[in-house]
Image 1 (cartoon, rainbow, N blue to C red):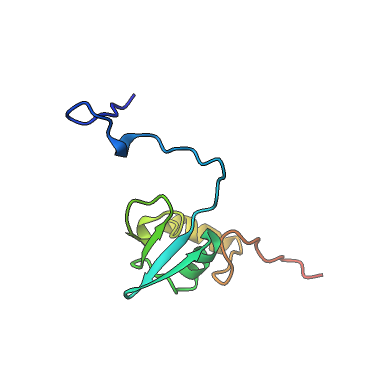
Image 2: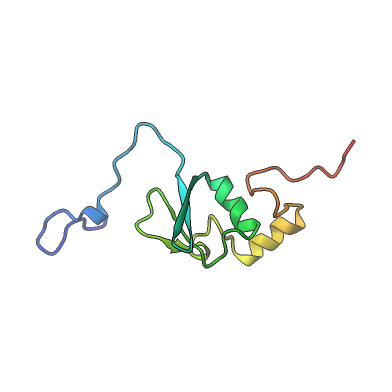
Length: 109
């Protein structure tokens, strides 16, 4: 078990478990375009922005619950490792659709 107190024995708020929210809401995502903050958007929407190049790997992103802005490349949910990205491409995923969208049907009947 992690000691959840600071040097003086007071509770360390950074180590306290989060308070449960009775209504779970999807995280709202934002990104910076220069000095302009864009969002909120859903996870599928920001993933599409990454895949179509609007959000690059060096773009700063933030979502509810994150302590600070991070580059997109530091957020695995947005920029999957190369091996996973290659697997997605081989399985028919298109960068014009989000990662949460189903792959295009091979049979167009």
